[in-house]
Image (cartoon, rainbow, N blue to C red; front, top):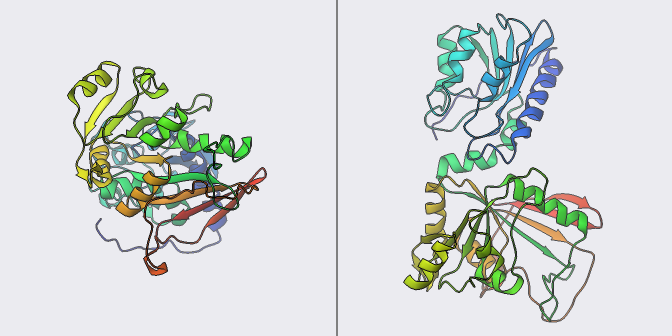
Length: 375
């Protein structure tokens, strides 16, 4: 990503007004959550004479960008108006024409920009275009808040690999199941419903063959009007049963089976049942997760919710693909030698631990959600 000279807009008595309109733009942007991937969430507000005369957001991948959606909703001419947009306007032709052209054509006077777009096709060129066409650009307007809503996009567009969130629920003593293997349910209904929000937000959901064999899950989004994520099953030797819920619904829900040990007969059977077979490199006899992320990125999958068992979680941490960890903690204690969230060999010394930053803490019913971002 190219460097920028960050010119913060001057603090004036108008700051509160400017923040008011940018906050509205952020609210609008978030309406696209789960529908615009792998594009960013963007909101735009057009203001004239201290009144909103048009607003819009990027509603769905391939549809109008936020700026053009706002122009579509104008109640009067935008000439001489201000525009507040959460992300630098695009200046290239993709599925939609450049938003910078629309801004200039509508004779917008000033554009307040929240985030810079690290996409090499934009990366400062959008701001440059506007200034070259007589539009005043005020940069870094609520930059931190605007950046926070597009962490997935920024990661994907700069690395070409998915942003991976590792999620698990555990008891106070760190167990994900009883000694018998039973795990339904560790957390309460409110916390389980909260997980569905992540399934709606992220493009893919990934589990290991161990989880499929033990729980026979569906891995779908149960939120009304929520988009069911693409299911990705790590199954090195193609042990997945044809009668499993995953395979039985593969013709209706996009399902990718990632494997490294060939089995032509099983591959053909799964393909005929609707599964998309994805051969990846082998690492110590198992699926190479780094190679898998590269291939999924090439398929324009920008984000993954990892709902694996202890072995897959350990492999994911060891391979370095995890960007965030979500930990749901229930007010329960199982005790004994039951399963823990991360298996594998583990590290030898505390200095070798997989490190994450400060957590954000949220109470959900009687449970607690901790979110840690990778340092």
